[in-house]
Length: 419
Image (cartoon, rainbow, N blue to C red; front, side, top):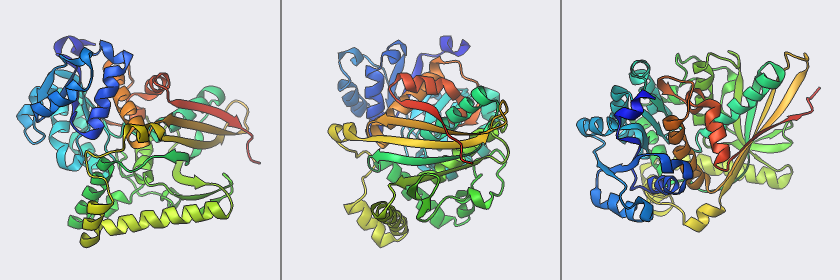
């Protein structure tokens, strides 16, 4: 790669002093593949960066430190000129991410982050996609629990369908089968940022409510593409289902992937996400309680007095997170049910994909996914050349293979098709 010889670093980790940033730094420090990477910690406070570096062990004692400011374009231009890839863990991204993305686009430097802020991603697409295509910068959002299991899970199922049956799945249903973990402080901060933006500009509801909000050319979604809002019994799964908190992000990312890849899964591809629970009264009560709790939380965030109490007494603040033991006990398992017509046999095909990982989804698993995304951008031959992209459209199955080697589960099985 020609850029490798012109840069001082392969990866710069921006936001290394934050909770998630420290986890990404720890992952890079202990990951064998990262040992061949030239990487650095970056932030605005040298003393705090030195403290983080001191926790990474003797092998990282001389790890370089880079100083910058999220609001200072000149310092960011200087930083991105020194590296092939920037990892950003500094959110809310709508508040702190604009200048860094712009600097990476100007410099032709690859970038990955953890954002789930749809309205901000839309602004980055409109502002930078065409210029990033010209400079070769791959700007890849949502490289954590949102939205890698969704985006790469769909890609994996569709690639299996193409390879084994010569067609594509016309619809895929993603459901969370098992999960243990909590909200991260960064996720909460992003949700609060979105609430603030909605209060200031109610027209954003049209963006956030559009199932195709992140498509290259947003279009009005069909009724069956709307996110599930209530509790339903799904006979296909034999389980009660409830809204999945990240579906309003993940579904838009998957649809953008389909569009950026040239609609290989069809113009009418249907994709949806839910949380699922066991059948019976207990499952119904759990689904109902989760739906009510989620609705109540979102409503409370919109009421200033209630929001202050939530922030003070309930919600984790940015930089806060679970203990190492709690992170270790976490896990997730999601299933993707796909159906389509086999071009080889002419029969209906039903597939079930599985994506799973050990570790708290929002912290341990996410830090692994983000770090491996950066390593993939730095070292693996990937299909995309530049633009504001998605994990599937930028790194594709190369990232799936890398995450498998890192201990995540990505697998597909065929099921008996329904008549």
